[in-house]
Picture 1 (cartoon, one colour):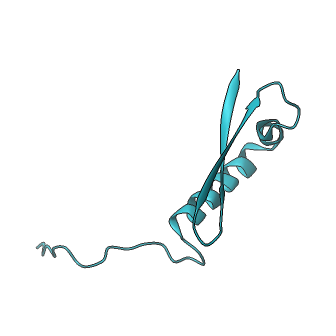
Picture 2: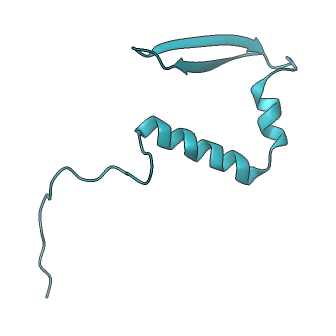
Length: 73
């Protein structure tokens, strides 16, 4: 069974690289990650997500403008 792993290289432009490997390969990255504790795997996914969205040093995206202010009694 084959699986594809995508790796994005950061250069002047984004180039997508796909490598096909067999699940039985010893050097498969998933073997490493399955050996890691669940908390570490979740932290790694969160870091990748923040990098993908460009969130660094606590600068999370916000609304560009106020859409509508609702006054409640």
